[in-house]
Structure formats: structure tokens, C-alpha cells
Length: 365
Image (cartoon, rainbow, N blue to C red; front, side, top):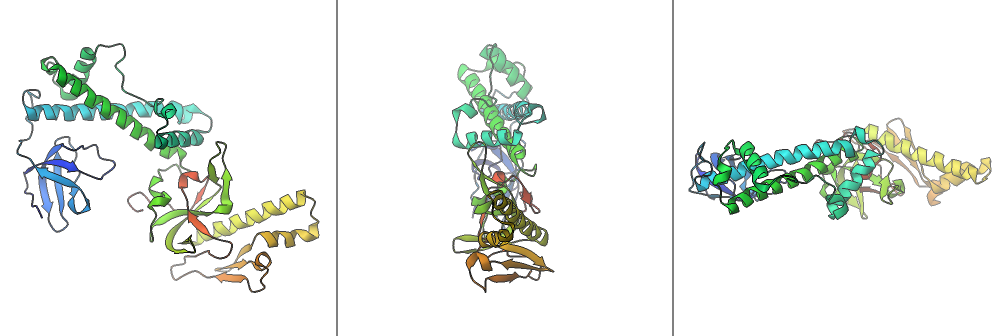
């Protein structure tokens, strides 16, 4: 195992952190190497303090350059690298700001209409690479200004060097503008996605960390049954209500979740709502009143609480006189509502119109 010493200069080779603004080639100074966990703490020249978890796939390499000195940014190779770092940071900040202004008129309160629906459309377009959506997002533009004037202003603001721009070669000017433009556009798109995740969420929080592809045994996720699926106004799958639970097993291709008492109560109430809706539809069809209960029981199981026990009566549904189950809580008061009629699957929380249960923060998921 390579050992890094405090004060040693390193360059980033690779990191899997999806949120960092660091890029391969960025340099920094080691503060500490925790060899027990193989974590290197680095103060990056850009100002980031992201640590490198080498056992998790992060990679750095020793370099022999010295930290950039204040002043004279364009004079030396290290100074030029620092200037580009500052251009990247400035472009990132400007892109995020542009995205926030753009979002106010698109998915914010001033936009009006169904902003959750609009946010879902934008997220789907970003995921699919839809040009109609991507082209409508904020992009860097220096329209109406010459490259030299725009570049000088951006370079001066980013580096505090008001004369350095005109000492650059044309290739360097192009490189500086490309770095700024790339950082601006990337940050704008990422910030739009973040804001859309908030606007599209049924809880007002970013719940992308609970996507079903990320839920493993022991993880908290959002689950629902296929009976809860409806078709949204855009023809997409919608789920009337999702429930928060911990994935504890898989059975016959279905997910087995445990849930708290409030979530179990919501499942029972939702089943009763479906039974009431079905009873009303049968009544509208002219089914006699004295036959309504029999018809409802034959198509939808009856779910109810008897003290702390959930009684799942599926006798009429399965034509089995023994098909009545009593679901008791475990020692922690959690329920596993599972059976012939309750086959669950982890679902995308953004497809849910409503979610019942306490959602974990991203660092707790």
C-alpha cells in the first residue's frame, strides 16, 4: 500500500464521488493518511477538502509540482493550472445561479400549473438525453460580446488578474473559455436536476437515493403493489400511494418489507379505500345491495386490525375457508404485511403521488 505523507503533493486520477467538482489532474496537498482505513485527507488547490477512499476505488498519484503562489497566475505551468481551476470554479458558480433563476420560472411557484409534472418531464428528458429538453436548459453564452471582452471579464473576475488575459496565447484563451463553458453548462444541468428532484418529490425532499435500483436487503425503500398503479396524464406509470419500509427478503420474485405500525395502518386504510371504491362501482353497475359485500369480498381481501394484530381475510377471494391470516408485530413492533393478495415491489418514489412513512436522509439510506 502506497503511503502518503503530510505536505506531499498529489494529483487526482479517479474518484467515484458523483457530486464533487474535482476532475482528473486536479492537484492538492496531503493533510493526513489514515492507513488503517486507507483514507487520504487532501486540501485541493480548488478549495475542496474531499478525502480519497483508496479502498473504495478513489485513486491519486504523487506529483512534484509546488502549490501555486499568489500573483503571477499566468507565468508558470502551476499558475496556469490554478487559473484554470479558478475559471472552472467561477463557471460552476455561475451555472448554478443561472439554473436557480431558470427554475423559478419553470418549476417554481411563479410558473403556476402542475410543477411536479413539469419537473418529472424535465428529469425524464435529462435522463433520456432528449434534445428538446436539454436545449431548453441554461447554457453559457457570450452573445453580443467579443470573445476577448467576454473572456477578459470572466478571467479577471475568476482570478483577480485584470491584465493576465491579454498576455495569454490564443490557445490558452480558448482553453480558459472552454473550461468555463464546460463547468457552467455541467453545473447548470446538475443544479436543474437537483431542483427538479425537489419539485417532483411527493415529500418536497430529494428522494433519488431511494430509487429501487439502489435498495438492497436491509435498506429502507418505498414499496407498493401493482394494484396501486395508474396511468398519468403523460401516459406514464403513476402510483397513488407508496409505503416506506425496510427490505428484509425476497419471496417468489416479490419484495418482502417490514414496516412500522403507522405504515401498517396506512396499508389497512388503503385496502379499505380500494374496497369502498369497488363497492361504489358495483353499486353504479346496478348490483343489488344484498350482494355487494359478497362481490367485494370475492375480488378484494378484507384487511383490518384486531388490537395489535392485522387480520387478513381472503376466504372469499381464494375460495378457501382456511385463508384467513393473523399478522402479528415483531419484537420491535414492525409488521410484514405479506400474503396471497399483498405482493410488493420496490418503486420509484417519484412515481408516487403520496408516500406514507418516515424517509431517511441520503446519508442514512
